[in-house]
Image 1 (cartoon, rainbow, N blue to C red):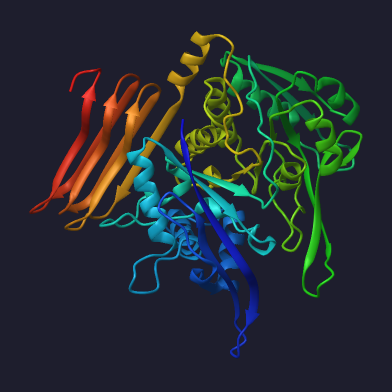
Image 2: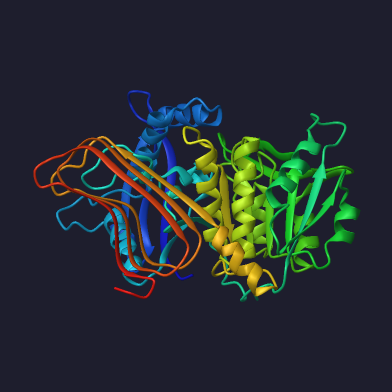
Length: 474
């Protein structure tokens, strides 16, 4: 699966107070590289938002107090900040280059990988909830880039070019470390284990090793031949005042049964045993302090040359975590890249709770040049079965499609395997074009498409599926 890179750079971030005593978050953003071109430092766009309003929305997001409309509103704000439209008559800006890159990726039968290069002051913002309105439509979950299977959102740090990471061969061994020390709030680790076994019990090509009440010594002994380290327990984020007044620094750590383990110690053990992927189930493991680049354990592990880390930036419901894990590991067993595995997991979590925010909780940090870390299950038939069972749900609901507007539930070059469910609903009138599913070639797998509208207005059209080549026949 091919990915084209769009590198988005933010810089000069600061929070300032104006003469009216309002606090503003300001920074510059530009496209550093993309299939459609790049922007020079002089072309970087200055963006800003009310800091108090942003923090109010983020606290509500953390507490699960945002309904779908409020979550969309936050997503639009994040979209305006990180993908601002052109601010001059030339029509060339961050948003325009991103949109052109997405189109070019479609023409090349590729996906788009958004590499976010962020200063420490912007790292704690949940950019995984970015929202871009589709032309000619209003509302709809389709605007969230985190739910678009064509787009991967990756946290990227400015590091020296890493050495190539060889793809791991054979069945994927997952070491699960469960820990709930006596001096911290108790966790129901039996449920954690049950949920993970439920997610992976039927998945051939995945070998599960579980350590209960895990200590650092036990983890170290179990690491040989392990390719994925999955931690379930307390993630800790400890803050302290920074050197600059008003700033903080911090360090992330995991609480094993025999003590707190910081990132450097853990990374030393993991990278020495050729672990390809770390999955951190602790609720705080994806967070970082505002002024310290490696304050959280997830980016710190990437710094210490772990190829990929997936961590949670907020708490996540059990049913959403199970759905995410099931599709995530199934995708890896099928040999799909880590970016696609995260996307499949997000969509699965969204399907469980379509009015919630848990689909955006996982954060992907990628040190490797690409996410092709596993060849998949050793048995070819198992790999094929895993790919076939990878499911994606696309649910698009909009109020109206205006004249000249174009709405597609899903558009791909080739659909070879897997299960795809698409539902496109227009509550009002369609004056433009609506297509539920569009593909150049449909060679295998199962697709279920439903497209409906209240009224088809003058000049409007509604098509369930548009396929150029089906099963080898045009």
